Length: 118
Ligand SMILES: [Zn+2]
Ligand SMILES: [Zn+2]
Image 1 (cartoon, helix red, strand yellow):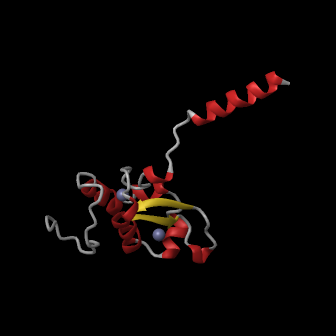
Image 2 (cartoon, rainbow, N blue to C red):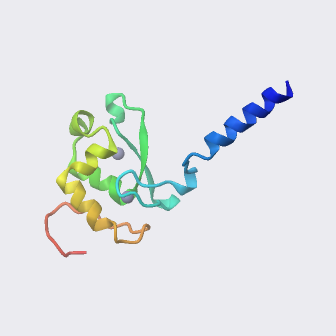
């Protein structure tokens, strides 16, 4: 019976060693960088209004960009995963642009195609 207990402890240790980020080390689902708690937004992969319950963490700036580009219908139909969002050309451009900015960078949302403004 003592052995059974040891077994359980070992399997717990195994699952703990998997790459697991605690909440304060949240990483952005889009740009893959750490998110300061003050700029952390939860994004519903399928909008709440469509019954979605799964959320991912994003920078506020990244999150704003998602909603500037996509309607809730588009999100629900075509972009219900971070992978799908990242593959959109405008999103890919934004991620490339934001990745060399500080992780606490919080720019106004870009809606135009003007380059070099920031
Ligand atoms: Zn981000
Ligand atoms: Zn959102």
